[in-house]
Length: 225
Length: 290
Image 1 (tube, rainbow over the protein chains, first blue to last red):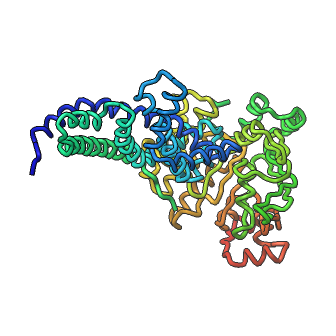
Image 2 (cartoon, rainbow over the protein chains, first blue to last red):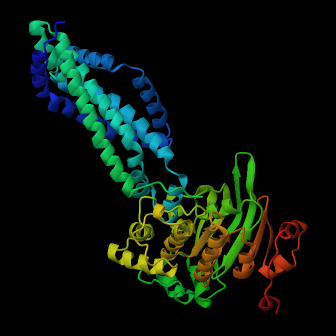
Image 3 (cartoon, rainbow over the protein chains, first blue to last red):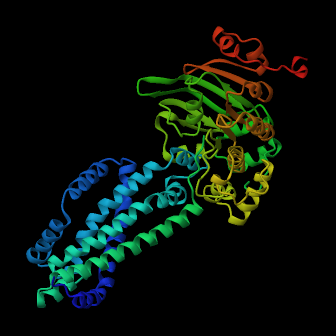
């Protein structure tokens, strides 16, 4: 068997340098997803006319498009066709943000539906309007419900950034592949990349578990009746 | 007005003249007769349907200041729906609602009207419905800070005072999941009382409690309800008999009987009421017979 651990280690070190970039692109995409996903979820939760239907279709359509296809299409559309002066990184973030917006909106919608209706009743009964009801009572309660799913989205996004290598961003994946293209030792390069992704995801999972635990201490669903 | 923590009825009239948006006619009426007896809440011809099911059928109800009205009746008779229509947790199809001189046609209320009317009421829920992300004290201060625009420190002091009043002295910082059902309902009552509402609505406040706790909570309600205007939907017949100043029996979306506890329990006018009440043994104390 011809497997060079030494080369794998070399690639591993090189690819480590790309970790911040991958994490950064993923986190920005998730953050944008949260910012746009929450309003989408609220509109659908309150069934606001027209917008509700529009978002429903938007979510359905985006869900059915593979991330690779989205990224390549946006790249061709924005850079080749419309001749926008934006980087491949920007295209990656735009593509992944669209994906994560739909994901987050579904997560928040589920979380909103999980809140007992009596919480709304109680807030209205003490004289709250919709805004304080949401900001002070409901949203603080959907955060702990959303965290496990948010973790999934974050891990998904870290892995999805790798697709950006197809349109030329130099992330963990592409660093490894570029290294291997000099001596054709792709197997070693892929292993190195896999180890990094694996470690990243475990770290991410543990971090979210810690957050979840701290929330469980502060807010726990009291089961009544 | 907000500084005043007491719920004694004697302090009501001057507060009304300053704070309420009441129309001149009714506030003049109140000035002439400042204590019990003036109309606090009035619904006329209220109707509500869920789909094809008519839950409330053109109900009229007038509640005077200081009255404690118990609404009794079988499940599905519309008691809770009527109560929830009074603070717009449920939207009635038609009718006119007046609380403390402020009126609205229920067919076409604006959000502003609904809020103004709702802020004259407070509600105690069957399942307590405490804000799960907030401590006992925060549950009480929430409405004070947000809708009454009270200062935080002031609201805290007031909240502790009301929590003491309902018998919770050492649980200010406990979250709802750390409290027993009875304790949660005490917080629920304190939360409603602290708002200093014109009318307190109790929606089966003891239905989710065990028999022992039921009496504890009824005692608390008995204390706080005296002097306040309250509407209590309840299945506790003894409580209705002992504490309410007026009992209303509802069946199939209509008010079947309306009178003092003695009239309704001892001499029911209709067959349906007698039939419903025959299942309960009311302990008629000597003082009630005399």
